[in-house]
Image 1 (cartoon, helix red, strand yellow):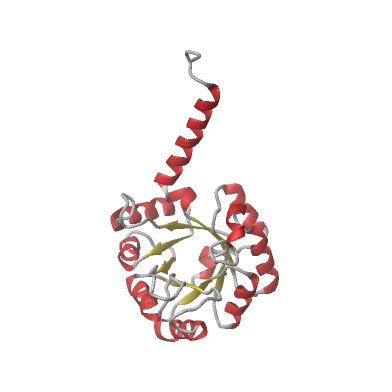
Image 2 (cartoon, one colour):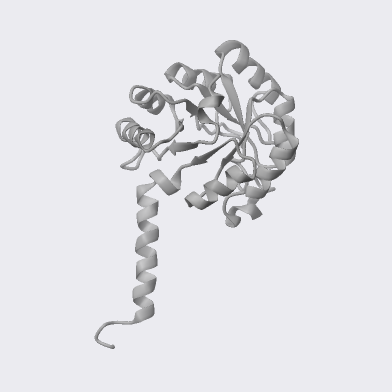
Length: 235
C-alpha cells in the first residue's frame, strides 16, 4: 500500500510538546511541508490536530501516533483502538503503536487485528528488542520499528549508545516485514548506516526538527570552548 513510497527514504518526525513554541499544529505542519520539500518520503506525527494540519499540506504517507498516558499502564504510544481511530480519521496512512512486552489496556494481537479490520490501515509496531519485533510480526504488524530501544526498563542501557543499528541488523535477519530504524539518529551518516544494516526506511526527529534542542547543543558546546580558552584579557 504505502510501503513502496517510503522504501529507502527518510521519514521526518514532526513532534513537539504542546506547551512549546513548536508544539502548534500550524508550526508542525510548516515543518512537515519543509521536510517534504527537502525530500522526505514520509512524516511521523503525534495527535489528531497536528496530523490534520499536516495532511492539508503534504501528500506523502503520514505515520500517525497518539501519545496518551493511561493510569496503571506503561505503554503510551497509541495505546487503544480509539486512539488509533482518531489519528486515522485525521489523515494518517499508517498507525504506529507501542508493541513492547509490557502491560497494556488492550491485547496487542487484538489491537493490530482491529486496526486492520476496522480502520483499514497498516500497523507499525514500535518495539525495543528483537523478541518483541518477532512477536509483533507474528501478530500481524506490517512494519517493525526500533523506536522504543532504550526506552523500556530492560533496554535503558542502550540509550547512550546512539542509534540502535545492531537491533536493525538483527531484525532484518529475523523478520520478513520492513524494518524501520527510529531513535537517536543524529547524522546523515548514521541514517545511511541504518539502511546498510537492512532498514527499509529511517525516521529522524530531534536532529532535524527540534530547533530548541539543537540550538541548546550548539550553545553548550560554544560555552565549553570559551571556558577552555579562558578570557581574552588573561584574567
